[in-house]
Image 1 (cartoon, one colour):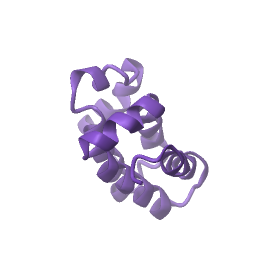
Image 2 (image 1 turned 90 degrees about the vertical axis):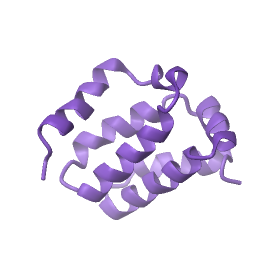
Image 3 (image 1 turned 45 degrees about the horizontal axis):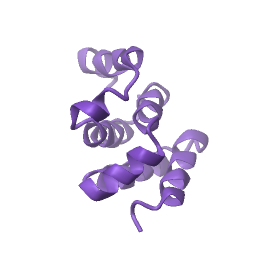
Length: 106
């Protein structure tokens, strides 16, 4: 159930198109939990190899919400915990993450 491509796509749709901070934080939290299970992670990454990039892109838009930042970064951490999946993140987007670490928004 958790690795169902439609479930993952629905969560991504919420993160990309809904502006509600709580919904984005909760969707990122669900993705984080889904990505913590290796069997789910493999299916999710196979079906959504751009997931990490989408999550990192959302950081800039919701940097005013500490909860969103924590959940998105936690999901990205679970996405990138292996070298082969870390390589899927666009290197240019990593500057957003580094920038937030050097200059936290809150």
